[in-house]
Length: 186
Image 1 (tube, helix red, strand yellow):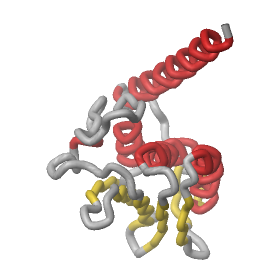
Image 2 (cartoon, rainbow, N blue to C red; image 1 turned 60 degrees about the vertical axis):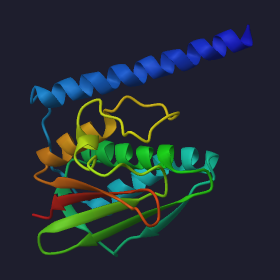
Image 3 (cartoon, rainbow, N blue to C red; image 1 turned 180 degrees about the vertical axis):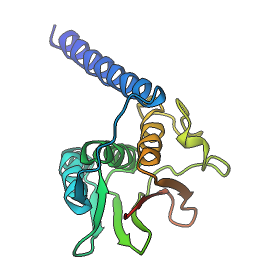
């Protein structure tokens, strides 16, 4: 009986996650999302995201190597940018091997705040660099990891609404993937 109830709860959580993803995707595609750039402290938003992913990372014994500057002011909607960063970090944890390391670095220049997340997971095949941002696309290397192919799609849409862009690169020599988020600083 307990196994049955646990399976029901798990199915319910997956359905809820998928429904929320579809609603967000639909709102973004129909331009129903209003970005309110009220927050300027990007580090606060990033730290909140790291706090939300910490438990899942600990369950897989994944460590973070984080390099943050003293200050990064960048006008943004903390809720929506948080959603985009959450999706990138969720993928990094999901596709990294147990005991792995995720590197996160934030840099700022005159034009952009750049958030770089590197994992040591599955990586992607050559030619998939742009495909992984497509709705429902899942990399060819994905076999057992759960997912629906909407996280990076949503992230890219959100970053685009902020006037930014995202880049994905395979880390052939180290294994894994590097995702770069670039946001305008003014």
